Length: 185
Ligand SMILES: Nc1nc2c(c(=O)[nH]1)N(C=O)[C@@H](CNc1ccc(C(=O)N[C@@H](CCC(=O)O)C(=O)O)cc1)CN2
Ligand SMILES: Nc1ncnc2c1ncn2[C@@H]1O[C@H](COP(=O)(O)OP(=O)(O)OP(=O)(O)O)[C@@H](O)[C@H]1O
Image (cartoon, rainbow, N blue to C red; front, side, top):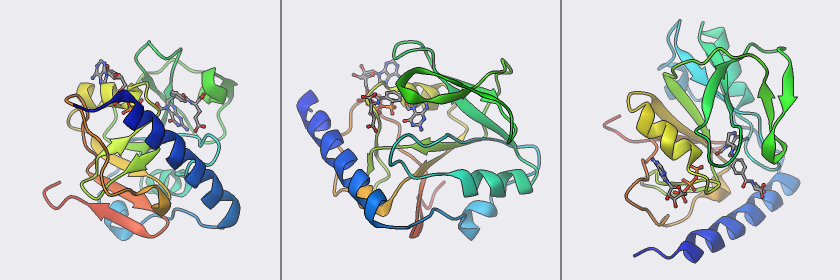
């Protein structure tokens, strides 16, 4: 049985390590060939705008846009309401949301083909630790056919993330060092 405090303590430790890495390193997440090869014209790719020291997926989103993909960003109302993905074009207006987020102002909900996913921690089996609100866990359950790609700094990898019944693993993780991918996906 996984104790709630295990995840809480791991989250706190990993956020601190991520903050340190972001202040000391001048790393960037660039699009690996294996990511670009999966992009097709007309796909919907959801990105996110980094909070604090999160890895920035901007160059992955730019590669997707160059390959004719449509972009979207997450929109949350609060911790309890399910997250939605709203269409967004680079340069479109953003509005302040909860948790210091900047969010799209439109109301065009889209179905994702590729979900670029922020995370607090991951392991080699591509289990993911998030903010603890289960926003992405619920999205993964709702869109099982979307390609689930985590975006992170390499220092966010740990030997094992405690998993629970509802956790849906990622299929790839892209860091400043490249892409980890599950062979079958
Ligand atoms: N950049 C980004 N956008 C995102 C997420 C995310 O993790 N990162 N989300 C993922 O679900 C959704 C927003 N949900 C969130 C849920 C909880 C917290 C939260 O508890 N934040 C902490 C501080 C986090 C930190 O220091 O890194 C807080 O406010 O105390 C943030 C976002 C959608 N957009
Ligand atoms: N698919 C789901 N539907 C409804 N509730 C869920 C679902 N998945 C998880 N939860 C609830 O959300 C809580 C937080 O889950 P968890 O700690 O795994 O979040 P997380 O994966 O770290 O966060 P996130 O996905 O937002 O980044 C759990 O205690 C669980 O009760």
